[in-house]
Amino acid sequence: MHGIADRSLAAAFDGTFQPSGLPANPPAGYFAWCAGRIGQAHRDRLASLPLTVTPDIDGLGPVAFCHGTARDDNEMAV
Image (cartoon, rainbow, N blue to C red; front, side, top):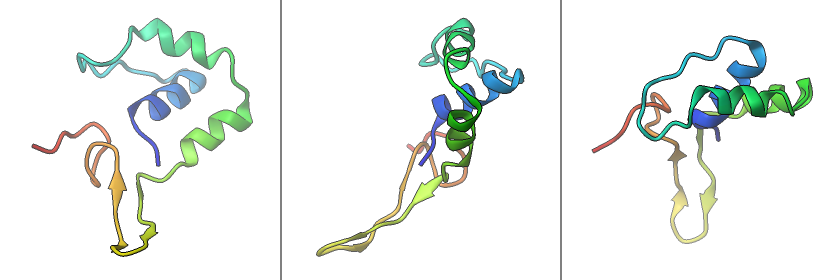
């Protein structure tokens, strides 16, 4: 399952990173520095992570997990 940092790192690798302005985000240079230390296979793996994961949990059944909300990894549920 991916979140903001995974998407941001893949975008920095591609040269398309745009800071979101969220207070919890590290400085833009952080993603550029990190992107310079991964290869194409790592970038592709990060970009391919699903937005949600729904494993079958013993005693509960299927449970959905997501970063942010199931619609958007930038959205905050309140």
